[in-house]
Length: 82
Image 1: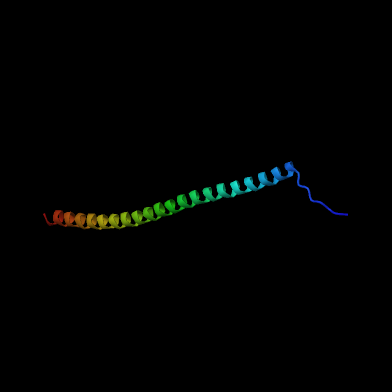
Image 2: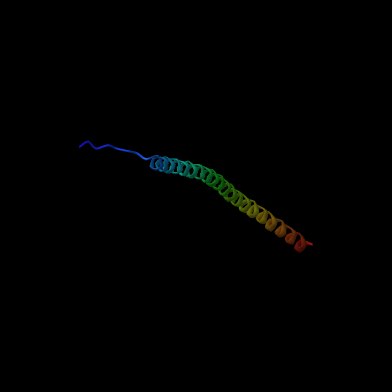
């Protein structure tokens, strides 16, 4: 007895549909991943820039505070000399 293989059209359609949907889901997830990676990189740069700005501003504040203290001491010395 010879066995024969028959493939029904509805089964073939279901298999193709599953394959296409799986492929589409993979492509969509890859697209989302790339977008999130780009956003992550931009946020990392922004955080690094903000950190550098904070350190710069702290340095400038210390510089101005030191300058302010020296000017205050100078004014106090001038008043005491009078």
